[in-house]
Image (cartoon, rainbow, N blue to C red; front, side, top):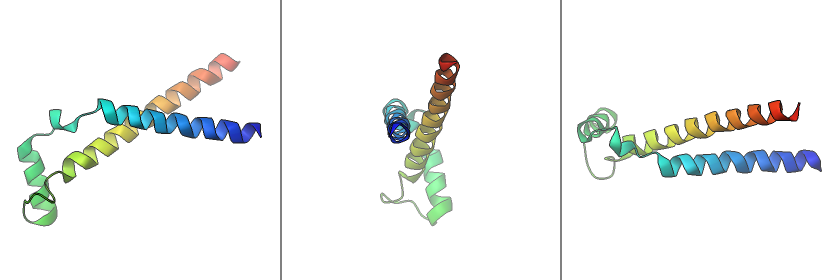
Length: 84
């Protein structure tokens, strides 16, 4: 039972950190409009409203995941050191 509680707590921590990273990170601040247009042109061959935001969304998800994983491993390592 304790293993299940730890697994749920760790999963909830990862989801919470991902949501926090998604709220804090705004890829529009470091990706220019020209870069997004070039990515859409390279990926799809043209630029239209449907594929315009793909680079921003991919960057947003990737940065949020990196933020959550780094925070998760940092918190877990600190918790392990404090338990000793």
